[in-house]
Length: 86
Image (cartoon, rainbow, N blue to C red; front, side, top):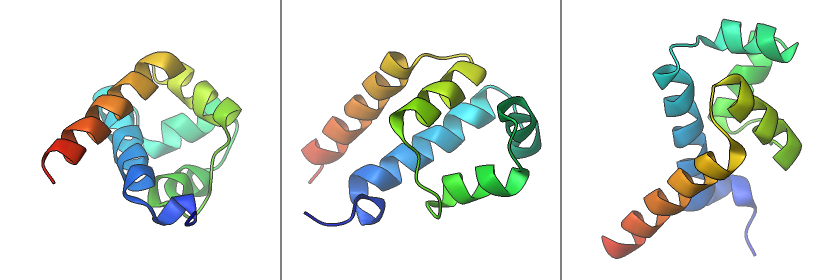
């Protein structure tokens, strides 16, 4: 099994996370403040330099106005559609 930060799936997760933040009209700085983190933390997460655990992802989803199940559902749809275009 390859390291997950270098997979197509993890890249899709990071892209969806960034899109979710932008759709919520939240800047990296605003998200960081709501999380009690630095803007650098958010930036590193979105670039894949900092890995998230499931609890951190859930917290970010909640701050952005979505739920972890809704986020994962969107991710699964995105991954399935990419598999079909192969």
